Length: 71
Image (tube, rainbow, N blue to C red; front, side, top):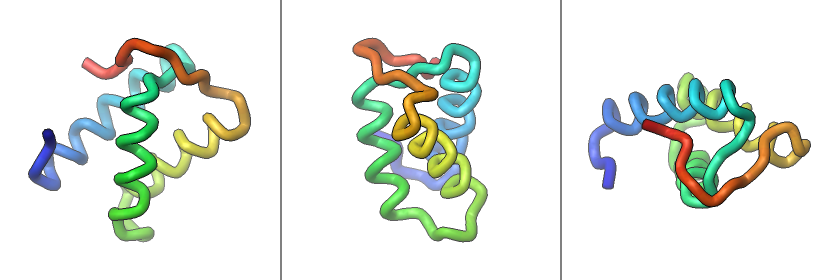
C-alpha cells in the first residue's frame, strides 16, 4: 500500500501515462483513483490528473479492464 505523498504522486503519474497510452484502466486502479480523489486537495496537480482520468472513464473514453496497466 502506498503511504507517502511522494509515492502516491509517482503512482498517479505512472498510471496517468499508462492509461493515456492504451485508454484502459483496471478496476482496482479505478477504485484507488476514486478514493484518492476524495482525499486530495482540489488545488493540487494530482487531484486534477485523477479528475481527468475519472471523467474520461465516465464519458466512455477509457475502458475498465481486469489487469493492471501501471508498472
